[in-house]
Length: 594
View 1 (cartoon, rainbow, N blue to C red):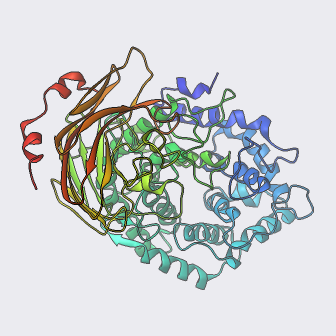
View 2 (cartoon, one colour):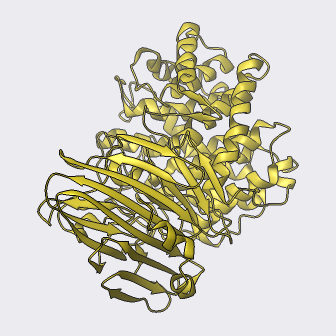
């Protein structure tokens, strides 16, 4: 059955309103008796079930609030239910009270959308509530001003709550607001880029820092024009880099953590268009936002009852973070901020178009060299220097050699055996031939307009100097390995889906491995140092895009001393076998570099 939103063309504002309704309707029967919680599933997270159910209640408000702001008639049945839930959730005497909040509490995250409601729809969200409910809502939200939070994008949650207090005329801590805004400034690097944690630059720059900054700018443009202008300026600059992360259809780059938020990927463009700056390209914003949503709604990401699942291209708990509960995917509803703009807004009147982006974009803040195929159907991000250390599968989500809109990436089920490790787009090294270790942390790195270099140490006594050189949908990898002992090496190409309309076939030689299917081709060729090709069939559900994959792989044994390996990797959705059979001469030449 799935969700009827898959049939929605998403061409007009009315279509987008209907899409919000189609996503909200399956949630209505899942509300608790007091309407303050939603039970969407039974999987666990780092916080207990009662908080997970509160999160599931809160996140659909990212769509309901913009619809209230725009006075959409179709929001009323949903608002009646969520309004009742708010009344009960903030009432200390009610069995479904959301409770006392502590430091680093997940409920602090969910307070942000309540701040948005106070800012954008104060009459419906606050002033129309009974006086006692107003007081209860204020007291429950005000807990955020007495709690410690991570020093990252979470700081904006308190800013939004206090913006809401300011909007409805309730007391708010001005000194705390100043401190929070100062902390946010510390995370700004320049050229539009924020970092979340020190060594992480991913979607949190766009769907968190910029998104909330643009909300702040919209609310505070008269009261604090200088800071508001700065937030908009940064977002306009950010768009130049972020546009490159999407292919011509709106498919976005799978990279980093929290990818189960799916079409939140395009939420930045809803906020940027809403900012109303004269430099905003409304047609490009519309094309990227709606194109991304269309791509997502065609994927099997819903339960039979139409509820969003945890996963990426399909339901998949393996790739999830510890903080992904059944309701977490509804953070994607932030994309519906576009509904705050009326029908006659330039955003809705503009014709969708794809932005003008270069074939190659050096993004030093993101620590990426982003390359796209000539037909715009494949975006590849060659990465070095990002490093995360506290989330699931950090080495896979941040440190592969390349990330792809066509092939996604894979996460391991174990480090033992290649099929368990699913080491796509990686060189994995082993001391015993069973347990493999990929790159995890760069000792040094550099990004140039035509290549990416990194130095990394998988073990004590082993240093790897890696150079990656893109050539369209091909790229060359050169590894200079310094080792004080013998090692085993496995070099993985892209993981290609094994299932689709038609048949897939594979071919393996002593110097290559390739998988060919109507939906794409993935192959790897030895240029120097490898001993044999192999077709690995990774454990199911390791890849983000497809549950079953082929992984073309090369094998080598490394002697003590200095060894050079070089290979050519190719992946395409549109070039077919012709691309594989016609390796560019410059690829062969680059493979001979030291």
